[in-house]
Length: 254
Image (cartoon, rainbow, N blue to C red; front, top):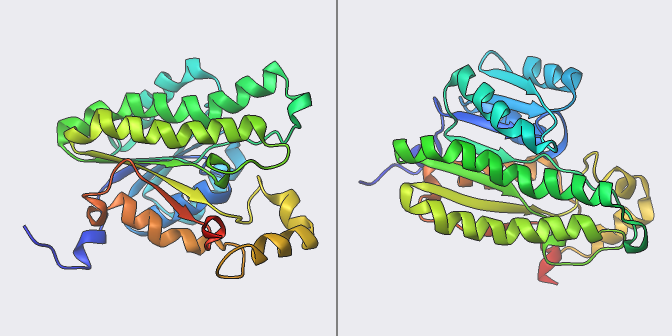
């Protein structure tokens, strides 16, 4: 069945869960979906920031305060999310942490925190939500990878390990679940102004150097994510799964 080009991007009436919706890339994704008619449940630790996002987004949003780095809370959180607008059709795993420690200084505690939030939480939330997507024969999962899925950055050992894992996990999740109608992909952002990259953007020399390493010649702006997110959430990506899309201005092309 063919669809008009505009129709394949329509998401009105879908239900989404967006982790990390309180700030940065997760907030951008949650705002984008809500403004396109999606019922969005934002999940993060900061209640005040979630309230602010929800008020800005409108009546078709709700939020859940939860620390997803605590694995024992994930299934309870998934059940609570599903009770609000129904089981999600779309899951965007944007919550993350970067402790920025040199390899010599990585602690057991920060290693576990990084792996649990950046790698374990996306998988176990997906494991909780995918069965209902399979029952409907349609679902979308978007994981957030990183430039560090492929590149080694200073003081990024634990973060890079987690994001390298996200890339492979995305392929393995697609192999496991896409035959049931659930497409699973990852976005690997370049340098965008967020809480995680605040230190980079506060340093004008470093920020300029990063911009000059792209093919386009600038760092990312939050709106640059809108097209890729809509594509991966909609019917437009019906034959795309197990892939990682770099949204980095050509940083990794050079």
